[in-house]
Structure formats: C-alpha cells, structure tokens
Amino acid sequence: VQLVETGGGWVQPGGSLRLSCTASGNVFPINVMSWYRQAPGKERELVAAATVDGNTAYGDSVKGRFTISRDNAQNTVHLQMNSLKFEDAAMYYCNARLIVPPGNYWGQGTQVTVVS
Figure 1: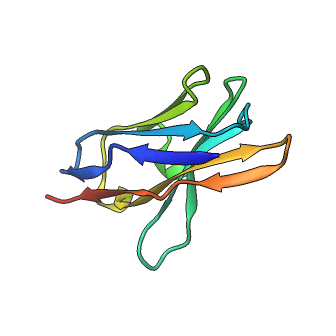
Figure 2: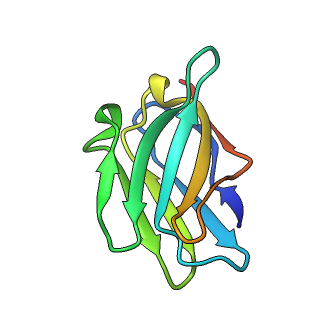
C-alpha cells in the first residue's frame, strides 16, 4: 500500500487547512486510516482515526476542531482542520492499517506550519 498526502502548508492561527491522503496498491480494504503528527522534539501522536465502517476517534487536543472523513470507494481519507493553533504545527502523516493480510503503512508526511 502506498500513501500520498497533500494539503499541508502555511496558515495563520484560527485558520483552516484540509489534508488528504490517497492509498494505492493491491491490498484492500484498509481497516483503519489515521492521521498522526510529529513536532520537532516530540513523539508522534495520533490526531484522528477512521475505521472502514465509519467509526472515528480523535486526540484530545483536536476534538471539536478537526474532522476526519473517509471515502472508501476512492481509498482516500481527509482531515479538515479548523481553528488552528500554534501547537498544531507539525509534520502530519497518513497511516493505513490492514488486518488481512496484516500491515501498517505510512505516507511521507505533509508539513503544517502555523504562523502569525
């Protein structure tokens, strides 16, 4: 499974960005598609996750501001980020997790920068 992220960039505090990740390859369905982020000097953390049957989960710091959505037909996951804060600045990574056959895949990352 190959993952390609798009949509990162620069934004002011309070602004919005939409990240997208498209999966390709021969192994489907993807059971869980997630977004993680990692800021310099910090560990990678879960931002949001969406299962193939529509369940979602969010990290505490983004609840109410970020929304994850999946298009299973297009093998795409989106992350709508609103009310961005300085602390949201990080490299954002798409993750795909499969059960059959088991696999865990990462995209190359897309940078989100929040500056005033």
